[in-house]
Amino acid sequence: MSSALKSALRPEGHFGCLPRPAKIREIRVENYRIKTFVLDAAMPQAQPGQFVMAWLPAVEEAPFSLAYHAPVTLTVARVGSLTEAMHCLEVGDRLWLRGPYGHPFRAEADVQRPLLVGGGYGVAPLAFLAEVLLAHGQRPLALVGGRTAADVIGVERFEQLGIPTIVTTEDGSRGAAGLVIDPVARLLHTGKGDALYGVGPHGLLEALERLARVHNLPAQLSWEATMGCAVGLCGMCEHADGSLLCVEGPVLKS
Image (cartoon, rainbow, N blue to C red; front, side):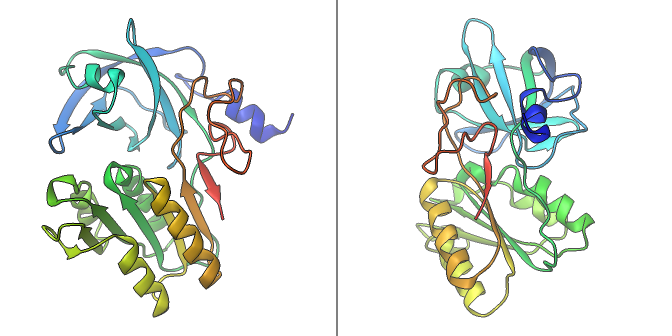
């Protein structure tokens, strides 16, 4: 077994094996269906693009990308039974966590102006990534898309980091009207981006993958999937190329 696979199957740190409780320190309402939970826990070894498994007893367990690692921060859309239950939690309540898991984003070599592209609540882990890229001397540009102005989140965090941000909405209620892939294509056509990082729906990631091939650029894309075990055993998260996203992803390099 490779050392990388061993690391994925046996993550290090306090939360590495069995679920451990973490108290909710702060809850931020992002919009009508998304909340951000700041927990009284840290995963200093975690990297952007990795995820944790969050569990509520008598409900279920599910994966969530890390919006930040210290303190552990999760941005959660209300889309199922677990997230419905999480949205009813209050400060002082507890979540149980294990992880971090998965293959993270990595800073590309010889890159100066990476484009960070997020659709919907997929934007959550990109500011964490932006901090890492800034530390590598890169100057990222963020592009954030949503259906309406109410669906756009995460812009303030990029602004706090001093990162220029382009916003698009499908109905034109905030930023430019259209899809977030449109300004990405325009920037690449004029040579204003030298790498792509993406999080969001599969349609967006497939479009980014095509643009990376056309412009011969490195691309790292975080793919969503249903995950049952997070350690490569159940096979629920098998990607189209045969990889298991919980171990070999969720970030895949194109």
